[in-house]
Amino acid sequence: MFLDKKKTGFFKRIFSFTTAALMLIVVVVSSRTYIAEAATSSVSQLKIVGSQLCDSNGKAIQLKGMSSHGLQWYGDYMNYDSMKYLRDNWNVNVVRAAMYTDQGGYISNPTTTKAKVKEIVQAAIDLNMYVIIDWHILNDGNPNTYKEQSKSFFKEMATTYGNHPNVIYEICNEPNGSTTWANDIKPYAQYIIPAIRAIDHDNIIIVGTSTWSQDVDTAAKSPLSYSNIMYACHFYAGTHGQSLRDKIDYAMSKGIAVFVTEWGTSDASGNGGPYINASQQWINYMANKKISWVNWSLCDKSEAASALKPGASTTGGWTDSVLTTSGLFVKRNIGGFYK
Image 1 (tube, helix red, strand yellow):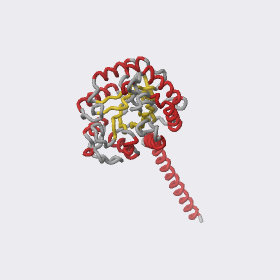
Image 2: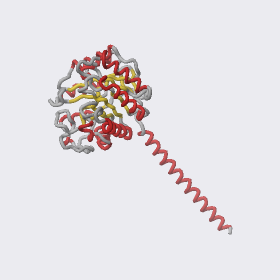
Image 3: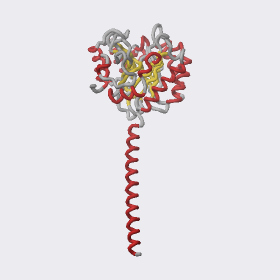
Image 4: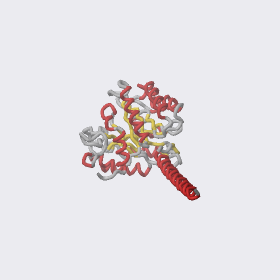
């Protein structure tokens, strides 16, 4: 009987020890899993400090990534798989969903177009990337043409995604024609920004500038009074050079933050070039200034500015052989790996 009790006690101790050990393993594994998930479950809340885009700690950062072409034409190239490939193989940390307002875009086809934007935004959130929601005016020229639709759209985006620090709002792509900062763009921004800020108080809002988003110097002379605002400057290396960099220098000297939400290695038409030496000058300049940028564009269109050759996969896995000269140049300047 005594022996049986000893055996029983022994087995109880073994069972208790084993149970405790298993519980410890579970706790350790769970803790490590939690730590890993916590480390990758969110991106930093961006903010503007002076003329610089910064992380939540106030450290200057530079985002680098790719823009879609018009979603109504080449939207298939921006999806979870392609974005994951860009993140993991090119070191892309920001993408831009170029949602045209006209030319078969949002105004004439709001349901399908908006659904594609939401797909891209959700993928960016899931992949811990930043995403620019681009109200891509172009042929319409003046952002006030569809300002009510813009207000409604951005209110929905802010309501749906405003609690995610991944989201950046670009409220007018390239104002052009007779559109001016004082008469058109600034009043438009003063109409749209409060609608966003009533819902989303802190995510970055980017405002286009006149002359196809080149006149950041003009905006700097009469800036908007809201917080966490940036101003778009666009360039194409074969057309725009030092004079545009001078405008950026002036704007930043006046304390406004600039984001190059679109640039290409070609000329302004998208076709001439690519102009690699001129593009490298721009790359070096933006790195020195810590100006964030997004390249035009991730698609297989037959033009010099496209990153992919015709027929390239829509879901990533691109070897260097299927990249255009522009695509290969941009990939390597983002920090991608040779393939």
